[in-house]
Length: 270
Length: 316
Image (cartoon, rainbow over all chains, first blue to last red; front, side):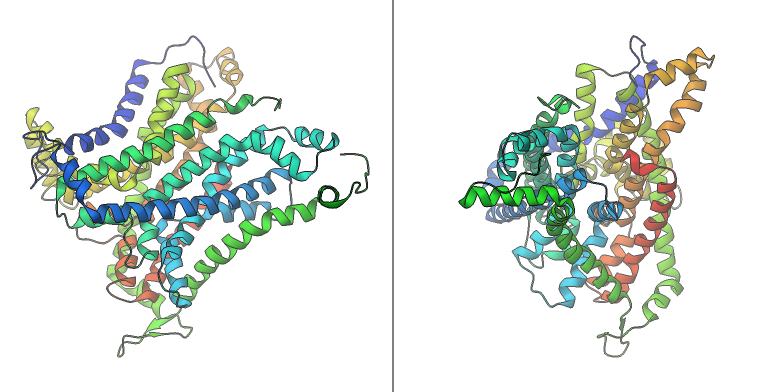
């Protein structure tokens, strides 16, 4: 509903900018605090600035272990979500069928319901079938709520891709595998990459469901939660927080640039 | 693929072609094949877990042995709904969720409106990224950032002092119920953090709904003699409402189920999420935890039913 040539009222502009500032000032604070020399409290302004805590954090084996576990869980969960999400998106794009809305609901439900419900539900199931906690119990939980991210990205792309492309390919003699490889895949590749990156960011950061499915294992968010509640070395936590911001910003920015302006995918003329 | 071409060729290629033809002709079969893996996963892992949860909520704890008795009983629900403390927890959580939703809509609407109607090119991209980055970046880190801001010696107190408004902050903190010894252990602080964390979930659906309002409709309204704020109230706002409702589903549901924020920021009084966590963990009362978590499911179920009536699902 673009209004061309009309200037926004200054009150609206101010409200919008203030809202945006509200979303970003806390991030700036965290970055500043990673350099503080104060160790006992959250004193502002910081009495001095130092790079010391980056070196301390680097030496900490527990942080590296937590990071490795998070990275492994994120990778596997994303892989599962990519397959399941793409299949679901392909099915939902193709046809109208009985129970379609129910299927949509089922896919959305893991993020529509609060994390605590998903968490305690998985815990109840693990408890009921006496499954020991392991790497895989974390992955199962993460993959479940990552599916919807991939699904949304791929579905949005498929809706913009004309179905006639696929029919043309098959008319010209390509079989299903070839059509997928040479027509469908190039069209959805960036959507897959974007969805995958967002799914990874989601998994890398997830804490609520993980607390119920991890048992004694420590992912990076669980490590942070422990530090938040019982701080041992506050500045080290600040450094890890900055690191996490950096790690999650990259996939988000990449995903944004990948899906930007895809309304005009070549040949999609819809 | 209109002609009925029988499987031609030989070997693997022929087989592949045959399968492709088969799948194209029998689109229902193809649909089932596509849907089978995701539905099996979500059906078994997710619905199965939800059923397990429901099942557990009908078990109960034997008062003498402290063991979970695996028999059907409504005892746990009776315990949940007759305990004054439990009802307090539910009421407190719902009130917080509703307040946060209203605040997020109030802060989010101008941003979404500006993005959809006025921002172009670079500004628009900047706003879009500005909303997306916090949405996807680390939840825990953002909660932690507020711990720094809200602390007694932190940024907010410092800013109030510098502006000679420290007395005002003290007066607000002295208020009963919502106040506390410092912002980081008060309902005000918790409310700020909740609003901050879930705000992007409110902005994006509103923006999506506003983007879909055809400019011709606004022009028509003006041509027919409506003043700008009449157009806003009677044309734009009703069309944006599904977006607001869609956003409120997220803010409401996410606040209902969160236990990290009340755990890290806030008072010692429990919210639903914490009650669930404590009962399943240290207290070892999984049935009560399960029954507790059925509460947000029911509330959100009702909420979703209303939202659907208002057409919110089209704006997701």
